Length: 247
Length: 347
Ligand SMILES: Nc1ncnc2c1ncn2[C@@H]1O[C@H](COP(=O)(O)OP(=O)(O)OP(=O)(O)O)[C@@H](O)[C@H]1O
Ligand SMILES: [Mg+2]
Image 1 (cartoon, rainbow over the protein chains, first blue to last red):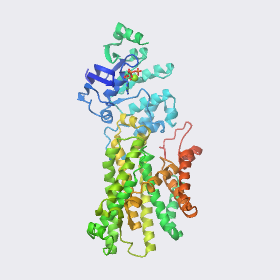
Image 2: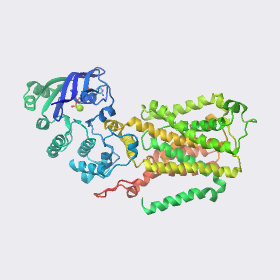
Image 3: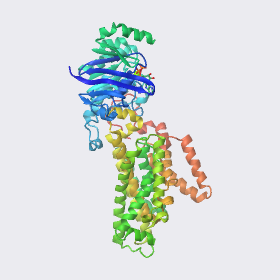
Image 4: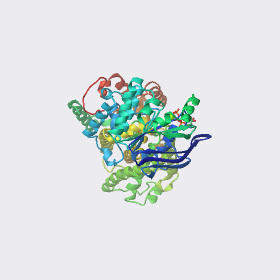
């Protein structure tokens, strides 16, 4: 399996707070990689570093063998490396369909093409993906009026609309009704298997991540604590201690 | 577009053409009304549609005036000699020279201001919110000061251009149609632009720029192009104003930050930000209000204007269009219930 994202010795601190210290990890192409760790262990910080949201203090980050640690956010997104936000972000004033259409990949879009209109296929894809996440009925509502969970689903659909190679999801199940979580797990897996999108997922819900990921990294206090297959991680004493110690 | 809308647009266009003949005494006021409509529509391109409130769009107006003046003079005379003579004796332009100057001046002003927007935008679009507003205002104020110390373009005295080379009443008609023509073209252009992917992208920047970046939208490119289009049209109406006013100076008429520079923002807020018709309606209401108070409330006109601004900002933030959209959402294509219509939203 080839590596899509290669993180090497990345450190990042905010003033005095060391959020990531000498972190290295690989995300394999076509797989689902998990990232866990107690609150404040530096998971979101690592995602932000990968997508170019802030400069890193040291280390290297490669996407498809290309150094990306000096690129800015839209440049990295256009390479096909996308993220969703822990605090869900959608365009609240627009309805579901408009949110989807504006998420079309701008990777290849030339300025002149932006003066065109969306094609019938674009509308069809938007409807199809909204159906996929179960928001078809609500697609003409102002998306700011959707519930938090529905907004998360919309954000996920928008990410799929963008046709990324690799998608970084920051706690996709947080705030989702427990009875709907299984449906979401199923959709995430299908995005991976049917659309061929490599997933890298931050998740607090152990049941969810153990069920989905094929490889898991665990951060604690900004440092890599453990890595391995789900059952290895589940039984790792250091991981258990970190989680118990944190609460 | 429904048949009703087509008829409405035809009636409006016919009225636009007929207005200066129906109200011949108000030709200059009507021309100014179209100037207000153009600057309001262009202000809303960044302020309403893209979420970048500029207080410095007047920079393009003033710069457009000067560029047009320099071009039209430079075609015939040496600019430095002309301005130092301050019109004395060197004011002979044949009609052909005059109209060539007007045409090339408008075009040159538009292009020059579009380029200025690209360069200034590259520096200023790193700023967000109030910092962008103040940064743009700073540019306009600084430009006024610089120009008023630049003797080549007449310094603080400004420039006196040749008068319209025929009957002055005909001249008023000429300027009316230049302003109105620019306004109509701009309106049609924006009506189209806001329906394209480009329009959606600038709305995305307004709603959540960080999200737009994270989705790979070329945010800087869209911001620069939008402001540059706005600068183009403001530059053109600046040029027309220069020929209409004949004589203008840098601080009070060209870079008039506290008059037109603020009025355009008030018009948009009054009419409704981020809508196509809001700036037009706002400009009309504002202009009528201003003309009435200037004529009947002399001495109190600024107080009345200030009161209008305060009332708008405090009680009427969404403007006339926002208020209507709230009352009559169905007019604005907002679909509340389930519905499987496939047409795109037509706003
Ligand atoms: N913008 C910031 N400025 C200063 N400190 C920050 C900033 N963002 C994060 N931190 C600090 O960095 C550390 C790691 O935060 P981070 O958000 O990466 O944790 P996390 O693992 O995502 O936590 P959670 O599970 O709660 O989302 C924390 O101590 C946090 O306080
Ligand atoms: Mg986090």
